[in-house]
Length: 34
Image (tube, rainbow, N blue to C red):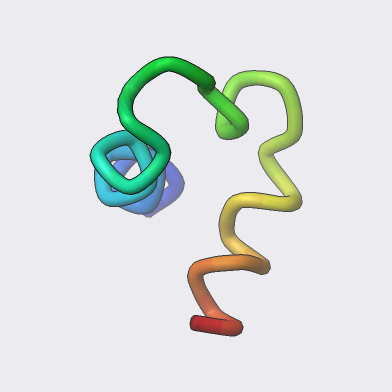
């Protein structure tokens, strides 16, 4: 599941930054909030 969330966040951030690699806890939390 974390990989799917990261893929969805990648295009949103522009593919420049990879939050799912540095903090795996902040990405899922942001997805749930949105």
